[in-house]
Structures are given as C-alpha cells and as structure tokens.
View (cartoon, helix red, strand yellow):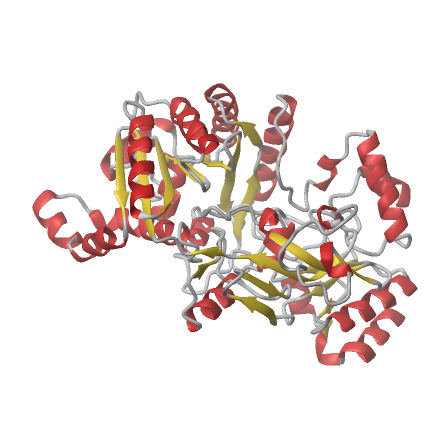
Length: 534
C-alpha cells in the first residue's frame, strides 16, 4: 500500500503500527464490531498530522482520529467504517499555555485528565479542572469534542472551551475565534471572535482534527460543600427533579446534579451477586429491593455541590433543604472536615451501630472528589459488573472482555418525562435480561441526560447479540417518544440522519472540506451520503 510507505517515511516505521496483535486490540471495544484496521498512525506534532492527512487524501485512504482511545461504551478506538487507519493522537501531550490569573490552559489532544490534575497540583494552583466520571487517562480534548460533561459549575466542557486549532482533511490548518488573527491577545479568553463561529462544526463531526484547544478552569471557591440524598420506596424522583430544576434555574445550584437508581449504585459498590442469585440473571426488581434495604441505599440516590463563600453556601444549603423537604428520605451535607472525620471513624461507627459506613464512603468519596474536579478510576469498575473476575488494578474494559453499551437520551426536566423514559428503560432492559442501571444528570435547569448502561460479559456466548438487540429496542422506543441521545456510539451513527435539510447541509459541508471522504467516514454523518459513496 503506497500510503503506508509514505506514512512510514513521514513518521518513522516505529510510529506506523501494523502488527496483528496491536491492530486486533485497537479493533476491540466493549461490544461486537466487524471493522478491520490496516494501520495505526502515531503523529507527535501538528505538522505530522497535516502530512498524514495529505497522504490519506492523495491515496483516498480513510483515517479515524482518536485521542486516548478510552471512549469505552461508545466504541473506544474502533472506526465507524472498516478498513480505516487509526490516527492515534496520544503522543501529542504538550500543555502549551497556562494562566493562573486568567484561569485557562491550552492543551494538545493527548493530554489526559490525570496529566492536567498533576500539572495543577505541582504548581500549587488555586484553579480546578472539571473531570468526567471516566478514566483519569481519558483525553480532555476527546471528551470535549464529544460534548461530554462533568460535575462542577464548568461541567459543560464544550461551553468552557475555545481557540481550536483544526487540521482539515486536505492538510490545511484553521484556528477558530480570535486565533485566526496574528498575535491575538484574547484567543484563549473569548469564544466567539468576530464573524461566523466555526467551533461547533468540529464537535461530533468528521470535518477536521482538533490538534489544540484552550480549556477554561474554575477558580477554587472559598468554601465547598457537597450534598447527598436518597429517595426510598414511596418517594418518587419526579418531584425531586422538578425542585432541583428550579434551584438550577434560579442560580442556587451552579453545577450538574447526578442521580443514580439503586442498580446504578449497586454497580458502583461491587459486582453482580452471582452467589446470592445462584448464577441466574437478571437481578429482578424484587431481589433488588431486598438488597437495597440491606445495603441502606435508596431507590434513587443523588449528589451535587455548593460553591462560594461560607455565607453563600449556607444560604444555598438552606434553599436546598427547603426545596427537598418531604421529597427525599435523607439529605446529608459534607465538607472536607466531615469527610475526614467519617473516614477516620468508619470502623468505630460500624462497631457501635452495625452500619458499614465504609461501603458508603467507598462510593461517596470518589463522587465528592469529582464535585471538586478530581478524576477517579472508581466508576470504570462498574464495567466489570457481570464479569466473574475482579476488576484488575489497571482496568481496561476492552482488553478484559467487558460488555458495555451506553444509551444516553436527553429529556425535559419534568417528572412526567423522566418517569416515561425510566419506565421504558426498565421494561426493555429487564425483559432482555440486563439490569437497568440509570443515571439522571441535570445538565442545566431545563434538561436531563438519562444515561443507562447495558453491562454484560462478552465471554458469554450470545451476550453481544442480545445486548445489541436490547440497545436497538431502547433506541427505537425512546426515539419514538421524541427523546434523542446527546451522544452516539460507532454502532449507531446513522441515527443522526432524518432525511431533512439539516442532513443535506452537513453533506454539503463535508463535500466542501473533505471531497475525497477520507476523514472518519460514517462518523456522525447522514446515512444518505454513506450509501451514495458505497
């Protein structure tokens, strides 16, 4: 293949990977895929990315950029189309610019959550990053361009980014916002620049490769307090959702609030209770109710953060108490001091009361850290829910055969809408033999991401097929109700197409920037063009 020879000349043979084990690993994700990968390209600079794309365009060779490949549950490193080379950007790990005073950092796509955490800690910075519940080794740029979200007031990652440097499929480079002007002083400080804004075109698309991005950081508040609540039987989550929505709209709550059902919390505490269930699946509602009472978790369990001065937090705490009164079974507020005391006295409390506080803290401590922007690997363990092996110290759901599919519709922040979607998810997933692990995230005061995970063991014959059938039914039924996902996996990119003018405009833009169709073919791309090109 002539493209391979030129890529080797450009990058060096060691950075054009073609050995079968490496290619097989890159083609493996947490659900069944058929795509094959001819090569993995590992550029280290923007210039090398440009050269790789020029070569790809010249030979009509498809390439698929990934930042760290930790996009578990959505496809990891697997391209949308077969016979597509991976453009692995994980060697691009430079932190290019940083300002403590103006609270921003400029990074390349290989910079991970953990790398930024260490960078800030080493400088004694008073700035907080925002972290997702994914791996600490996940890419900051990758998650932002997928419009992922975290936990702090800066949780909407794309809304807190600017100044993109983008390499187009033909190798040309563009900068968004003020970055297009020489020596612009506000390229890292203001999103819009002047004229049409292009930033959004490069999120969830295949129009270009982002090689640099500025991320805004949050000044550490004078005081922080987390709150945790639960709803037991008889306490519907709808009134809680609507109360929190009003608090968010009024500005009392500044950050996302996450609410997980009992299955979601159980998945965070450990693995499937194989012995207790006698090896049978799924864990049904009645048995889940028994375990819920024994573990002292709620039917719904939520967490959020309060940020500001002590007086501001005290007033926000008062308003949260008032809003949730009578709607939740338990409401607890926690700061650094109380958390430290709880960790210190967990064993004495268990001795005198019989309540195993350590299990609760096992789940709460990472959540508490996420509310302060601290990445944690703890949530990744839930991918091992149905595995018979314990999660290893270095977790890799792809390598370890974990089955995981995310379904992530967005619904209005009303009790009726949340209940309608919840009921369908529970019915479909239990009917298909999977536990309905549901997480509700109040993205703003108006909308909620209702994320559910289909978790299984890929080593069990037939599970891949059953999981995909379950996923397809969820998509068909929930989309049919008017609720659509905020993010898609490589198995479902065709969902973007509705045969409308919007899709036609996307096709026209794609034709203009990538007439050879070499960049991530099929990624968030209307189906009509894929069919025509095939």
